[in-house]
Length: 279
Image (tube, rainbow, N blue to C red; front, side, top):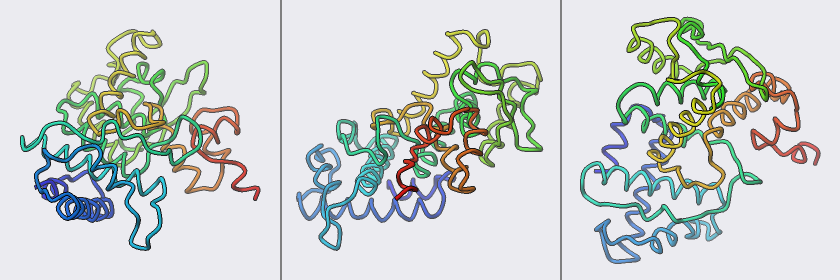
């Protein structure tokens, strides 16, 4: 049933669906063969940890990335079964794993972004999806509250981000998914150019940022990432910055599009270790 729900989710790429399906089937076999049960209500955190840390087919210990992805697959299973009323809870919630990137903050992974997109669209309404779409264009929580309908150019796939004392004003590039979500949001607001896209309070006010943080934190929680190490609302913009760097190889361009003035700060924000390039 969980795999059927996975295939029905139009916000996941075919590659992500295929990889998650493989891991979900591996998890089912692990539970049935190693723990003699097929009932999810009897799956404990210890069982999940055993699966996440199980050796690979080559007999090697799984690296942090594979461990994270295995846990993500189990979360998808339990999210689907909760929706169907088959099982309650999530045994992965207290499972802390090594971070894939150094430090206490990291960008999201592509697969995590796709799952979160599905979660915000499935939550109903258009506000959360619009906020996520703006963050994919590098907006931070302190910038969301100032963005109005007039700042969004759906035809060009861009949004004007006004900046803060910590970030420069800039034009953000919307993802194709983001264009669709913002189109829905603006339509729901009768396409009023001066209407705030996400914020409902005075732009720049502490309350506006707090509201944005809460909105995105809820989205991360719905995607099963609320307690993921190193993940915060700004991890969405960090993902966007990392993509820019990986596609262009230019840290200066990533800094410019993120509205950051320091290359060192940009590298830390997108999880890039300068020493990797210096041997």
